Amino acid sequence: MTKLSQTVGLVLMVLGIAGYVMTGMASLTALIPAGFGMVLSALGRYGRHEATGRTAMHVAMGVAMVGLLGSMTGLLSMPALLSGGDVARPAATISRSLMAVILLAYLAAGFRSFQTARRGR
Image 1 (cartoon, helix red, strand yellow):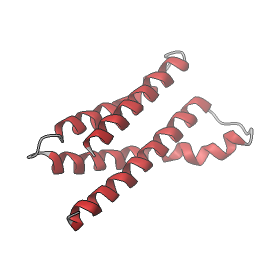
Image 2 (cartoon, helix red, strand yellow):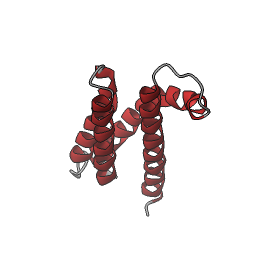
Image 3 (tube, rainbow, N blue to C red):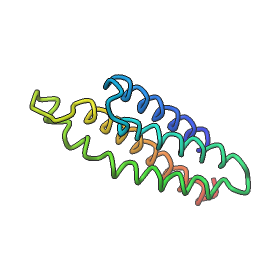
Image 4 (spheres, helix red, strand yellow):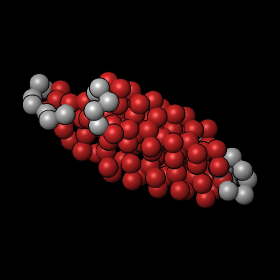
């Protein structure tokens, strides 16, 4: 789970930086995925230690949940964007949607990992 946290963190950092650059560096809010990515990556590194692993991964799941809840609005706007409708900030909608999907997959993998660890496998 620690390697997955670091990988997801890296992917979110790339998403945030790419979104910021692709939108002409107009808004710092495009870097929000990168901020979440830095935190998840740091928790992944911190979680490699035996004594802090469980705590770090539980905190990482909490951070991912907050990120998912904050980015869900992108998924709600995505049908309008895909059907050619008018969306205020299409780049933000795409970025938030990607962040939501990435974090949803990460949370699912984390819950499976926690269940496996709880069963003692």
